[in-house]
Image 1 (cartoon, rainbow, N blue to C red):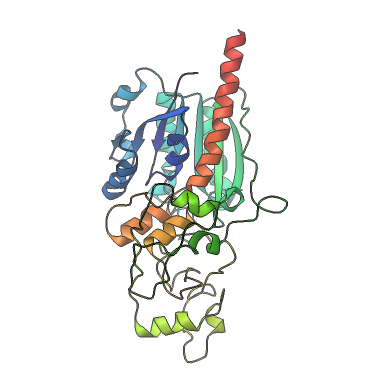
Image 2: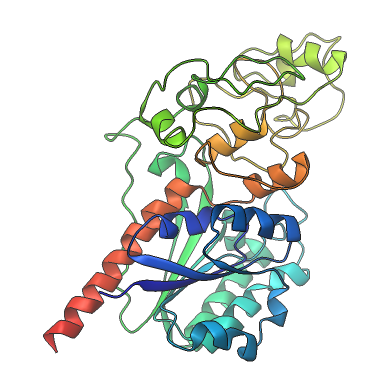
Length: 363
């Protein structure tokens, strides 16, 4: 079977690309990302992929000809999720309509299959009407659809992260969603302890490039497969009062567990909250290094998380590179598809192409 040629739209730092790029059956020939720093980060990790750092609206048929001259088999990607996120303002703004640009490119390229991913909030956006419009748009292009909500924790990611995965094919849709590998009756969920226990203990403002121990489990062996030292492992510097708040929190504690004198007067119930050492993390956002954001305080060290720790919760290996300011790097991480989830999806997509290839050989 020939290489399955892929285009990644709204590629971000390359979390969704990861599973396809690390599977020899696929070849990612082009990626599109609007933000300059994020596009640079993608290219640092996927140097052989042609990056189009431009607004997707400028991807004309003429520009795409360079990549569609032979064939494109698969398009993957998901528009920016801020408009759909239950943590955001949930407005039907211009970004909420970027799926139409995905459809436009899809109609130009006409691959046999596509994978469209987004946050769970997409299902309830505009009282559930938006997802029906999206499905109608894709179906109108001749694609047969399957849609399902997956939680990345079920695939070994040490984090609960719901993602809507919409898959379309030209012809019968034989795609099967990946079966869970972790959970009840399966491998135990990976926890923050599983992800962090080989990392050095740090206090606010401290950094270290030295691992605290040898890998303790298969997850840590994956992180460290190509790394002998740590990068991006500096704890943010916080004020004395905030440090006192974080140190007073018990494992999994929230501001309601604090003494009255330390309890913040503002914020929601899960702000100024500590994660659980022996449980998966809550969903990682771009604000994972901000203790006043939704539950993200380091459970063992009682401090804000480092960029590398956020990357580990997303299952990026320790040699994965990020680019820009610390806030930009954290944005790259917080918006990404976890590589473990992309690996699971790529494996199932491959099965579809193998089945098609076998059918063609019978003819």
